[in-house]
Length: 134
Image (cartoon, rainbow, N blue to C red; front, side):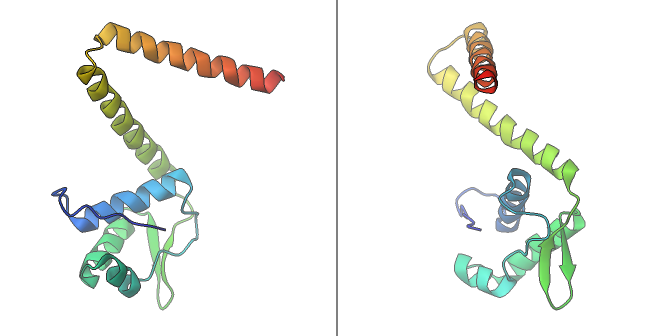
């Protein structure tokens, strides 16, 4: 698992880690029962204080995303379906927000933007149907 810390974002590092681990769990990049990186090596790799990593893992444990197994480390919990839905929704909303900003910069009116979305969704559904039939 590769983490990317943005020191200029203004968002606390531990929350950046929390978001990235939740996104990895939601996308399937991190599988249920899989171990998270150990605190000390991850802190050294990211060049942050060990307490920052511990705080992120503690937050994830409070959210019910991971569980700590004494002497073994932190592991992604088996049942986190609600997390998947929440994270997927948030990730999609971020993509939509970026598309809206891009449409604004390209001076695409709202109605035309929404029409483009409908066209693209219809095209993808047609392609999916064609793949299922063929």
